[in-house]
Length: 225
Image (tube, rainbow, N blue to C red; front, side, top):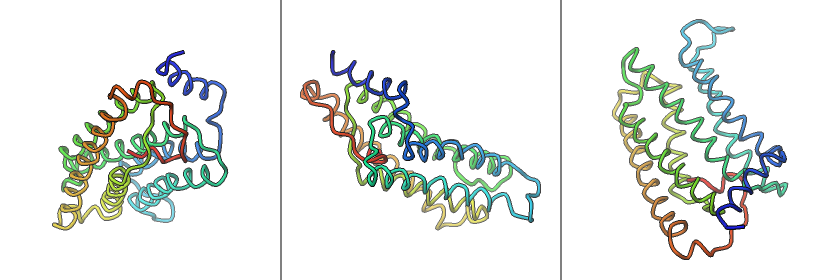
């Protein structure tokens, strides 16, 4: 069996046999499941029970969703529950949380000014994640994954900070310091994408990658892009 088919069948086999059913991957799934609730709360204009504002509820749930990223990695390391499927799903869950919420923030600001998140910033994030997802799929087919990089961790952290501020304090979106954070987040996102492409060029697309043994899976979250 070729390395390419081995990488593909490894992920498929894990999914079919239910090997993804562990606590770490449940935290990952929860991160995705909370995204629609956050979006509904951001779009909701009515009154919540106990006079809780929709932005406060959305912000709290978003923070909880972001914390599941730490929880799944901690559990996987502590309980030796690391799987290659988990490595693949973890960054995918980040995308399925961050991108829809960012699009919603842009829409809310477009519908009711001021603009919370500029459209060009959302497009930069979407383009970066689409490119990296394509590279990750190519790597997975060859049985190759990447260890955590500081640029990927910084990218995710900056996005969480910016989105949290815009959810909790939408009125601050037009201030200089928030705009500066938004532009800085966009710059980090672009840089981390370039860094990932350069590593992929060396690890996936080089001739030596064809004969390399598949790496040992690391803790969930170790594939941070």
